[in-house]
Length: 317
Image (tube, rainbow, N blue to C red):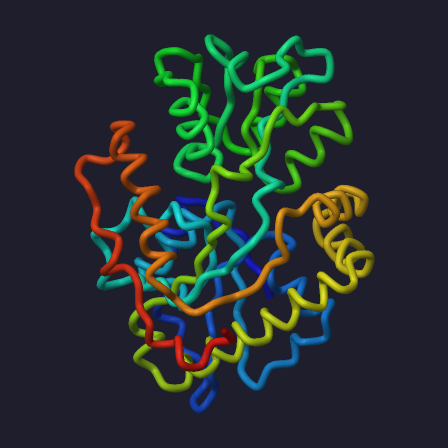
């Protein structure tokens, strides 16, 4: 059974979830995911029949998954490389154990169909929507750096993806930096144009995080390794069968299959899972330093303690 949590539910229910012990002798892997996430992909690829039980909980964002792992409510979950930056001081309760390389072209800067904006420099002084502390936020910072501008040179408007879609639809934004299905819906329903993408601005690194307690438990660690291997196979299946993948995604989310097919055809790279390496750590540190320079962190975080190579020998290379 899948549950949907918001921030209040994460914090209020963490203790209760952590206290839910599995049946004696059974292994339960408590996974944080998203609507239309890994659970849908594994099922569509025929890889959901695991020798352990996966208890999926759906979250609205990777920052909430990170918080839930730190609170002891989850064993593992995935996110972009950005949320852990803001909890780097909790490295004793959250470890990054695998890198998921993926597409960055679904991360877009959109403008209305009839907008006079035609190039990145046209963003100066404009109302720009973004999602705080996410890849969307990071793209905004990179764009401003490219232009030699700061936040004071635009009208930044932090919004959730859902609120951003509504604001963009009613003309309250001149540009919107967004990712995934919401961007696709804005293009399909509203005729939004892509001004630019995350290509060359994002690393394409996403991460799989786990609690140290799960890593220290032989059964749960083994289940997590098996889960990641299955996920790797599932991504290969989806890449080879985009129509079937789009059908499964559409059925799970209610988003038109054509939007998922468009994402597949426009993707900058196929998705695959890799062991932790120094390049991934350096990439995350660079991102952290960008947020620091923008005044969004109180001090420079050292991201290296967040990372663990414990699963490296067992992960696909």
